[in-house]
Image (cartoon, rainbow, N blue to C red; front, side, top):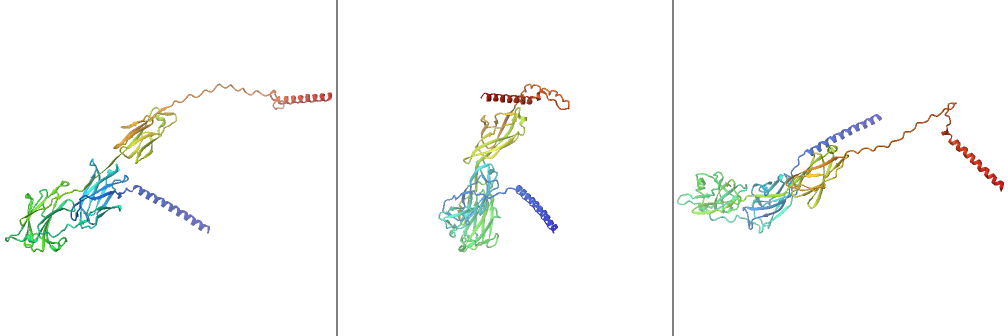
Length: 501
């Protein structure tokens, strides 16, 4: 029984050791994974304000400029993002642009989609503080809004209410009674659409000949026959998406097109269309903006149909974009050197250098520990920060330390073991020299002459082999004898006194 219990105890101990060992291995593996795992980007709060730049009244299907301001905390790192979702009634024009500072350095990049914009911060935030900026983008209302405000939602859940005084009106209006031409920027932000709307009765043949529509487009644009379409709809379906396609061809109910690129024109002919007054026709073509198009550049278009010339309102290219900036960051590095006759005697010694500076309205302090030839310092200090260095007094056996010597561009050695400098863009390089002098050893004191100690005299031996008593050893006997004589004399005096009495 004891054997069984002992066996169980041993088994438990073995199992326990195995569990502990596996736990340690797993812990080490997990910690190793944590240490080697790369840092991941995170979404950070940044949006500080949003507004619609265009003055009301606001209507649907019209490009508007959305302006926003942003700022991020100094703890952000490259790769962090911030995002803003549009209200349901608003749709953004696709765009990609860089946020740049006044010296054209890239702070980050932004991507605009139909539902939001997302900005990603770059390396700039790792070398600057107080990073902030603005951005602007194009969007349109896709539906009417009755409320006097719409709500944008930041990715951290923060909502931003933006005023829409009087709401957003439906721009559809009534069915046009005359030929009409208009253009707009497409959602991709890189192309535009021209739309020609003609009431059906204007397409009725005259003198047996079909009516032609001549379109003159801006010479900076290029007509692409494959990027066009024709369609018709009933007046009762105006403002809806109830369209009926018209095919390109030569038979009744089709259309044909002839383009003249040199004259920047194309001619459309609807062949034997239905021209009842309950319907209208529409011809649509898309054109890319030219390469290198500039913000604010406008493009026009005119058309002539049934002896009527209609000029479209110019379509202006409005680029999305933004900017950013912040305070530069810098730092400093202190390199330790040791010189003088005592340098070899303090090899490997450690030196403590205190640093102080002011940031965010309060004093910051710290220490550097340096050895001969080593370098230490700080980074990520705002440019303009004033730093003071002070080395703790060094000591060593057999040496004397002189006053530390600081050197470096724009570094002031205060000649008292301290130095002062101002952080610039980049790294301030500082050398810190410790002059050390060897102290020569002093001569040891000479001891005075010591008289020699006489040897022990020979002591005679008694006849029986014991040591004979010498004068040096009879002192005690003489004292006893003297004491006895003195006692006897005193007794004699006492007797004589008694007799006289």
